[in-house]
Image (cartoon, rainbow, N blue to C red; front, top):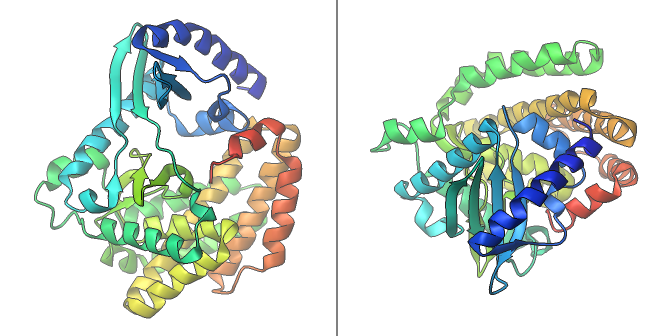
Length: 360
């Protein structure tokens, strides 16, 4: 689906939804940034079998809310799964003191649509605007909290893993190997990921050693907000049981681009305060998650054209360069980051720039 076609789909859906939401006591905001820019491609790649819309609105008193809506089966399944995860997380002892949950106001079918409405969580400042020490502490507390719940010790293991899912070291390795054919025509990237896969296969026991932990596969600032010194988790569909350092790896890789000093601090913390095997496990998971990110952008290319296709190709090159540095255990050069962000900001569409405002 092209961006133009997607925007027409969004416009048609909003025309249908406005009176439905008005009858429930809610109105939509005039501008809907969550459906702009690259959202069309993200939706096509991440929601299997159907789409969902994330909308901003308010109630009759002007209190802001977030509205998630889906008509297609895949989108509805994703909303229902996230809701189930949100309720089940309260059964995990770690959740009470670290993660807060937005209050749900409404969840019901209305004709063809499944509508879920939650309170919008304001934040005094974005995560990356906070002092480095605060960023480090919030992140560390979140990672430690996840480590408190492990599949081998949970009293309700069968029901919890049935809800959140459980992946092991062999799953990570198989998934990584399945990436390789997608890069067959890009010999440099294919060779790089093959090297990573061989390394993971040789050290799979290290990943097994730290398996069975609760983790969030997309723990980055656009999936949580901080209000009154409480961290509110926004995306519950990305929670599963897996390697202890999967959340760490995703977050550190993200911060390699957005805040390198924080990434360095977290790696240093593990290397200084944990067993050498933990540092090795984190390193291996960083390689896996980088390979996954590169493959994600590879999948976008058939759905991209113009500046976006150029940008996604640049993203593959950039993250491949980062992967090489992490693989060699060397620092990512600041010039590499600067050159990439300059090119990225030049190629991003105006709609995507609007969508990015406040996202991180």
